[in-house]
Image (tube, rainbow, N blue to C red; front, side, top):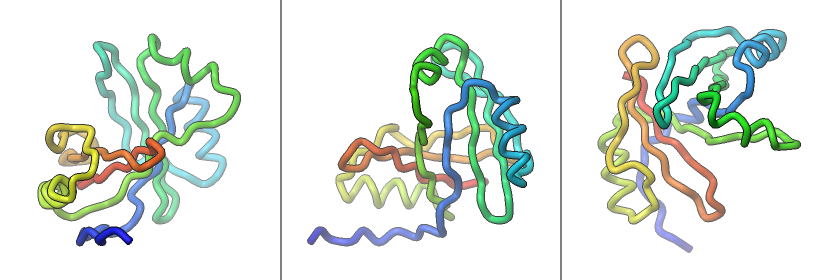
Length: 140
């Protein structure tokens, strides 16, 4: 059995879902009792996308619409797609250092800042054995 990495994970922070129409998806999750608690634009490969965090109780669904040029891949799927599971952490830099020392496959060279939430957030991703993306995220 592999050695357990000593990480301070508070719980699942959010589940990220790429969507083809942010307004339609937001209405759908609103019908399930979720509320828009954060909305922000982001850039991806030179285009602008939109991210909406929908919250119900302690659950957050991250809905994001990629720039138009990248929507064809999502539209071509016949089933849904969960992009990543994000873990909430208190110290993103320590978590990054710990994961790096453990030799896991980190996708970013360092934690990335996004101007989401009131004061921003920092995150990085790793991949699991089947290519699943696991995000570590600290809301600042």
